[in-house]
Length: 215
Image 1 (cartoon, rainbow, N blue to C red):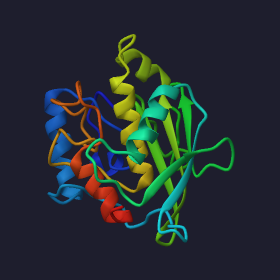
Image 2: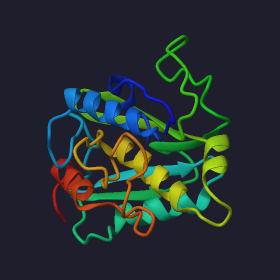
Image 3: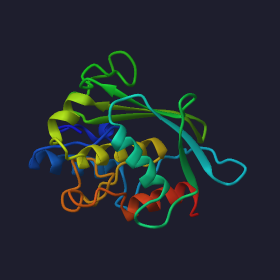
Image 4: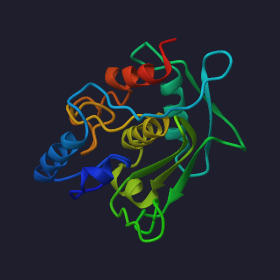
């Protein structure tokens, strides 16, 4: 997330953006230039399926937000919306495909190489790696300072939403720019139902099903 405007060309690969009202409008406008007006947007590569027809992805949390991590893994494996994809996350202690790390504030995180820029103000940041049409690994960073500053004591909904958003990037979803209730909305927390229902939305589930098939 970020509290100020950032170009969608960068934001599309990164985390949620918490912005003032005008900046949110700018973010949406720029986002729509890069992504179609659709329910979901997906990458052109995904995790490989095993012989059983399921993409088994190993995940490991190397950071602090264990509750949000566990909740997100369960939500992706058993979506509240009902229909799931041929995709299964498995928590492991080594050889993970997706690793989650703490970062103080992402200001010095040159995710695309030295000098590629800082991401001050973002709550989360994801980078995926590919070989042809297949994902090979992904890294998620969560900004500890931002997460702690912007989530009240005992209120972990924002942490869950951010973790889930970054996980969905790591599984193949880009931002969805047309509905601010979607988990993949890039311009801030989903505005209305997130406070009570931080679960994966129907469009998010449909995006995973598009990539991996319906189970």
